Length: 125
Image (cartoon, rainbow, N blue to C red):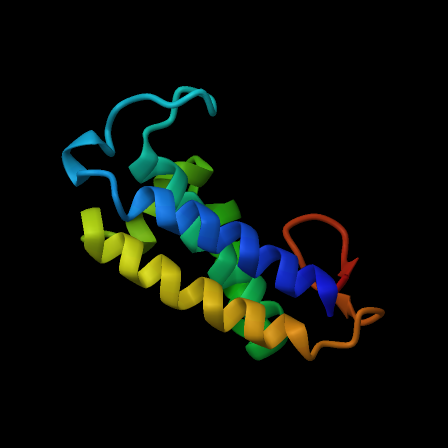
């Protein structure tokens, strides 16, 4: 599916930029909601994993969504809790691994398949 390859290319381009940035700068605010690079990467990694689970393990996806909703925590707080300990280049490495697994999984998905998500079900495309 072309969208999976577009996702892969865009993610790899971002990875090229981030992997050359010193982790000490990951806390500096960016233009995206004032989040630091760490916050952005953590968010991308968490939700790439959730997207992967749409096709790999829907029950685990639903578990995370229900747990997050009932936790009383903000989305970012829940992401931080789940990804506790992932910092700097370790976070970058895990994000890179997950983005490739997610792209691979979606590359062969039926574009018309309806998938669970945080909101209404949506197509794989």
